[in-house]
Image (cartoon, rainbow, N blue to C red; front, side, top):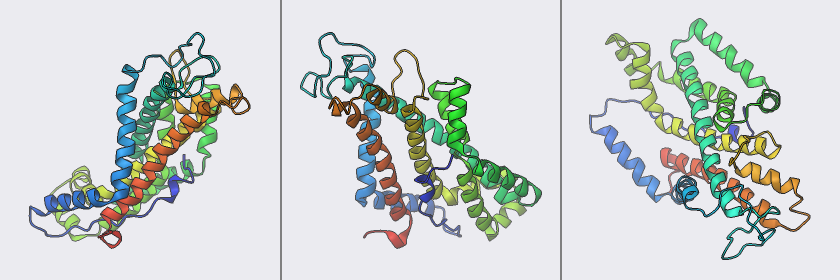
Length: 310
């Protein structure tokens, strides 16, 4: 699935290969790390995402309540020292729901973004390097998937097939989000395959997989990493949208940030002035996705020497 936010990624120049000495790759990595640590966008975004990721991993084992546990005599309570984010109309602790929701959000984002990255990059590399009839066939497949309304397909799959688990949701999101990645990687690969070092690799007897893995992909590592960041954010937004309209994972103990907002709307939290019920998950989604896109902008400045803030 292609979302407007995801398709506005900043292009990253591919690092050209040269005849640098053996120590050059390490120096480039050190240089990249140096500028990344000096970039406030990258540092700030990594801190925000890192803190929320740790909370999502460790938090569920530390919070005092399960996400669906109803606390007797604690309905519709505002944020306090006892219930940091307040409680719902049923007496559920919003903070506990939020922590469990973070885990689900990151799980779908990593799995969905990872699947889309693997599929899109594989097709893009093969199509761009091999060319010919195989390129035309893969291009045709990419264009077909690209014009299919991915979000509508996800709604149909979730509504009529009854597939509501987190891994399956991530799988469907990943399989509908890869076309723009394939086209972008193909374009970069077409540019790289004409370089002299690729011809040398062919003459040395390396196969297609080896050339792509050892020669082409390393020269695109910055672009590929930024692509995954964008796919991660897109998967989080798509999952939150599906959960919000009631087509997310269901089951005992299952909770996500989108499902929290769905329940808040169903129980008229806005009308009842239970603002903490829908503001907390909405802020969580905004922080995660916003930080990922700020990180993408910062990484563009790090990887592109023309944009670096000295």
